[in-house]
Image (cartoon, rainbow, N blue to C red; front, side, top):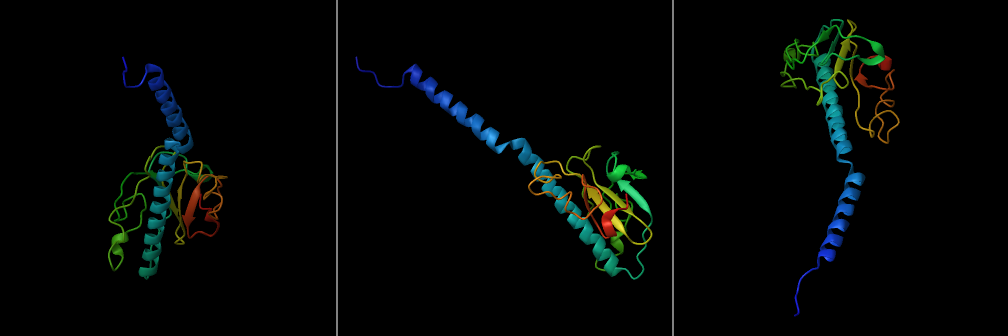
Amino acid sequence: MNRKGFTLIELLVVIAILAVLAVAVTLILNPAELVRQGRDATRLSDLAMVHSAIALYLADQLDPSFTASARCTANGTPPSGGSCSTVTTSTAVDGTGWVNITFTNISSGSPLSRLPLDPVNTTDWFYAFKSNTSEEYEIDTKMESTRYVSGGPSDVETTDGGNNADWYEIGNDPGLDLW
């Protein structure tokens, strides 16, 4: 008899080869790290958007008013061991959100429909905002992926001009040292 088909050994060899390839691809791509990199990219975009909105507010208002405050979106420890006077997840742009600037006072309207929240928003990863009465401010977050953290290939934490090498800091405060 002449039968056509694969033997059990041939099928097992093919399955074993596919399994080895699947493991190799998973190890090379590291899907968990890719997710962390995506969240970090969102953080960078969110803070740039808020920074631009604050710059527009300062340029638009004849007499912008800042109150000294420190606000966080989660109950974590902000840069340099500072503390948040207010913890809120409010995304309102009317001055009651985690950035206490009334963006609705901008003559052309608020550039933001709502304030962003950190993609994880836990005590380890959150957004922090601090301002003083001299119209200086700082917005901060921590990076999560090995790509963007201090010493990573696309390090943004030590190259941001801030005073804390473990946080990404953006704002108009010289030295970014409000915390």
